[in-house]
Amino acid sequence: MIISEQKSREELLQSLEGLQRLFLIGCGACATACKSGGEEEIFQMQEWLVAEGRDVTGYIVIDEACHIMRAARDLRQHQGAVEEAEALLVLACGAGIQSISSGTDKRVIGALNSLFLGNIRRFGQFEEKCSLCGACILNETAGICPVTTCAKGLLNGPCGGMEEGKCEADRELDCAWHLIYERLKRQDRKGVFRRPVPPKDWSRRRKPGSHKIKK
Ligand code: SF4
Ligand code: SF4
Image 1: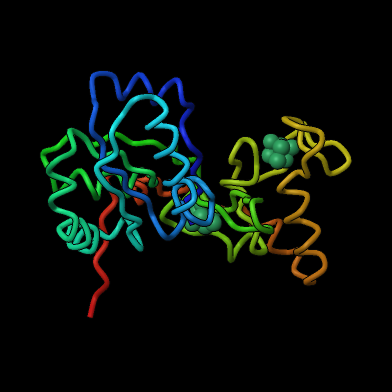
Image 2 (image 1 turned 30 degrees about the vertical axis):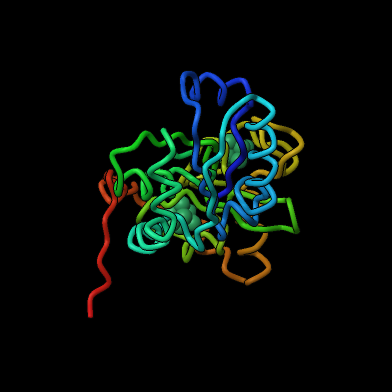
């Protein structure tokens, strides 16, 4: 899921300068799980805006704000309140914010920062495991991603800074390549470690990404 956090109230106030009437939009998927843009956070935002002297014309929590068609459909059901607002304040990730802004000429203000694609360790604790490089090498690295987990993103580690299995960038963290080696050893696949991983084809990560599932 996309991990996000709320922008500081100071930053939000700057973005909202000169805007009186606002319609609030949350996301029922990732932003709800991150407690950055679900129903509870929408209510808190509404309370804060009213305390700051703003008018909230209405709100909605869209199931998945990044779904362009669904977001547009759900917003149409609140057309009056949306029209009344000078701007839409969106508590969703960057994809969700742009999904909303693609369907309107109204000003759209993003209230969140998108941080990374995250795994859930437990409620409220997320870890970055994949950077969406477009050409996955997990089959060569015992299911541990060095692109993301190694501080230098090395494809053939470990580097000379590894010490007793810890990373030179942060001695609290395990070296990704040490973890890869240990897991390959447990799987009796140490030979894989000696096989150099070829240079990565970064063209697969060209922006903006677009993908159609072939039928
Ligand atoms: S190699 Fe790492 S960053 Fe690339 S797709 Fe696989 S898990 Fe994601
Ligand atoms: S110590 Fe390991 S994880 Fe840290 S930068 Fe070097 S190879 Fe990467």
